[in-house]
View (cartoon, rainbow, N blue to C red):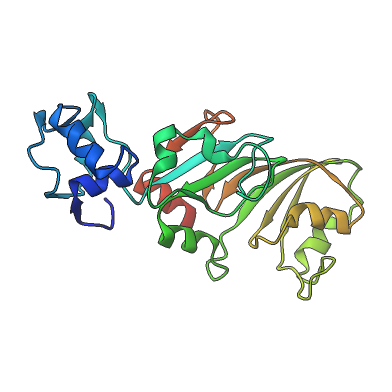
Length: 244
């Protein structure tokens, strides 16, 4: 259930991107919105944001969009960006058009660069976003990297030491766990989110990341059935797995 207990109906629907408050009132009058199967008499009344509201309140016969406090799991494909400052298609364009008009808008929980694929979270819940990215929580992120050159053999110890310095940084990296999959492939688990950190770590040991894919955030693993570009709304149990 949303942390908001109740809200004016027209404000809720406007914030979900269905239109302005005036447009919401007109749509309700024409029966586009139904509550428990009946037309809505007044859109200025407050309504409880209960877990079952999306099934009780419909638009053109379809369930209401996810309520505020939504968290989306996406399989980010290559070639799209998380940043509004970068050129090219953004991950938000992969969401339904109406979802892109929500207020508050969806934000990515951390970022993946344009050439990195894998597990990405988006949310309109600021507290959830902060809890995941806060350094105090030490939420682990797991990446699978394909490398340009074979591993030297000392990377596991170097990454785990907690003494590695990246170029331009003033503090060493926290210890990271490197699992060798093959001579040119490795799985790296980090608890920080410094700029291009994984790529820079391998560059620091004389290697180059050819491809990078995020497999997990905390205890949450990207499911096999979620194809690149696809997404799903997470329930409370799935969100809890991140922190478990």
